[in-house]
Length: 618
Image (cartoon, rainbow, N blue to C red; front, side, top):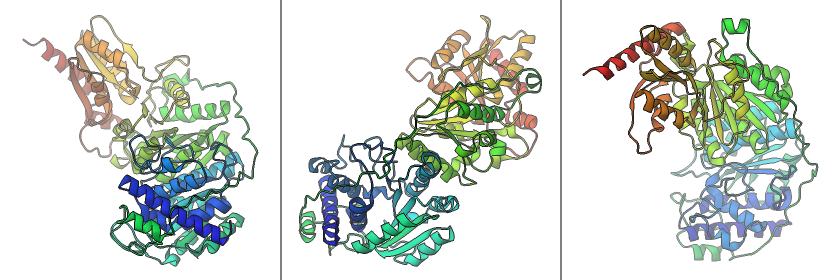
C-alpha cells in the first residue's frame, strides 16, 4: 500500500476499535488508537501470513504484548478478512471469540495469551529461538509492546536473552504513547531512554514518529534487513490519536470513548478496506519428527545398594527420551549440573537452551517453543519456579503444553537452608488450571513419569529430590498418571500412611517398625498428586478408617490437601491427620531436617501409634 492507503487503513483500525469498545461498553480504544498506524503498515506491507492456514510453518508470528489493545488486533483481523464486521461487534460478549484480552484457545491466529503485561516479548524470544535454532525457516517474529510494560523486569530478561542469542528474526515495536493507566509513564516520550536500554543489551534501535506511516514503513524494512541483532522500533505516538477530546489526555485508559459517534465522524467515518496480506515467503514444510525406540535407563546392582536421586533419574530419562523423539527440547536456568538436565545437553546440544538465572524467561521460552510444536522440558530449583508463577498461570490460559521440573524440593535438601527449599511448589502447581503434578520417589518411577509427561496436555510439573534414596520398583513397572502404588497392605491394617517422594521411604521404615510392634499399617505411594487416585484412597479409608499423610512441603495446598480432595464429593470424610513442614527450617543435615519437621520415620511411627491408641480408646 502507498502512503495514502496506509493512512486510510490506520484510520479504519481506529474507527473499528472505537466501534468495538462502544458496542461492548468497555475496553481500551485509546490504547488501540495510538498503535493503529503501526499495525496498519505491518499488516499491509511487511507481515507474511496465511490466515487460512495459521499453522503454516512459514508464517510470520505476531504477539500483541499489550493485550488490552485487543480491539486493534480484532480490527486488523477484520481488515484481513479473517472475521467480519458482525463478529467484530461481539467484542467481550459471552461466548464471543473476541475476548477482552486475546487467547489462542479462542482464535487460531493468536500465538499466546497476553494481558498480564511484560510477557509478550519473553514468549516472542522463545518463538524466535525456535525459528533460528530448530525450525530454521525464515519467518519473522513481531511483538507489539506498550511503554508502560517496559517497566517489567521480565522484558529485560527477554531483551538480554535475545541480544545474547543474536535473534535478528525478532522485532519489538514499542508503542510509546506516554500514558499508562493512572498517568504518565516513567520516561514519557523520551525515546532515547528506551533506546539506551535496548542498546545496552545488544539491540539495534530505531526511533520514529509512530504516526508517520512512511517512517514506520522504512523502520520495518530496516529491521528485516538487520543481521546479527534483534531490532527495537521505538515509536512516539499519542494515546487516543485522531480524536481531539481524548488525544494525549489522562484519565481515559480502559474506557469507551464518551461520544463514539462523534469520534467516528471525526476520524472520517466507517470504512471497509480490505488488505491482501502477503503470503509466507518460505513455503518449505517442516520435516516430520523422527522417532525411534525408547530405551529408558535401568538401575540395578550397585545402584540399588547405594540408592539413586530422582533428579539423576530425570536427567538420564530425559536424554533417553530425546534420543527417541526429536521434538523434545530442554531448557534450564543455569543449574543444569544440579537439576541434571546437563545429561540432555551433552547428548542433544542443538536442542538444549541455556536460559541462565532468569526463571521468567525460562518459562516464557518454553511457552514460545511449544507454540511451534516442540515439547519443552524446563528445569530449575523448585523454589525458584515461584518467581515465574505468573508465566505458569498465563501458560495455562494459553493452553500451552509445557513440562516444568523442580529439583531440590523440601527440607530434605539439608544444609543449604530455606532459601533453596521448594516448600510451596505443590500448592502452586496444583492451583494451575488443567495442570498435572507428579512427585516420584524412585528412579524407575521417575523415568516412566518423565516419558508420560510428553504426551499430556497443559502445564505438567515434576518434583525431584536431591538425595539418593532406595530403588523400590523394577524397570518394567507402569505408573499411570492419576494412579498410585500400594506398597504395603493386609487385612489387619489399622491405618493408612499416604506419602510421596522422599517421605515414601520414611513411611516404609515407619511401617516396618510398627509391624514389629504388632501394628499393621498400609502404605500408599501417591506419586500422582494431581490428578489424585481417588479410588485407592477411598478404599483405604473404608478398610483402615484412618489416613495419615506425610509430605516434605508446607501443610497448605500440598499432598494432604490432595488426599482430602478425594473425599469432597458429599460422602463422609474419614479421619485424616497431616504431617508436613510447619516451621521455618534452618541449616542441618537431611536426616536432621526431616526429624525437625516431624516427617521422618520416627515421627511417622509416633503419630501412627497415637492414632491407633486414640482409635481403640473407650
